[in-house]
Length: 117
Image (cartoon, rainbow, N blue to C red; front, side, top):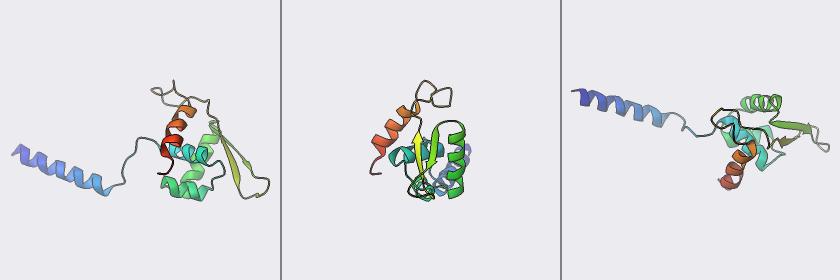
């Protein structure tokens, strides 16, 4: 009987997983960085659509990345409503497991491997 109960719980887990959003290996912060590296003049709305998060979530991530020194942004001279982003490629990744790698190493993976997807 334990097997039938286990089978039911596995079936429920599979059903709930298939109904939720798919998980990814990279965080939304990494996805936003990849978008900015691919197009430094990206609009927040375009990044939000590409990453699959809200406009406000992208704003929060941009603020956090800027506060930590991972990006800088300045207003474009020809369009005061638009920003130009610069990613600091030399900073280390934040988690202790990956601190030996730089943002640039992450972006090499995402930018060169992610074009056209």
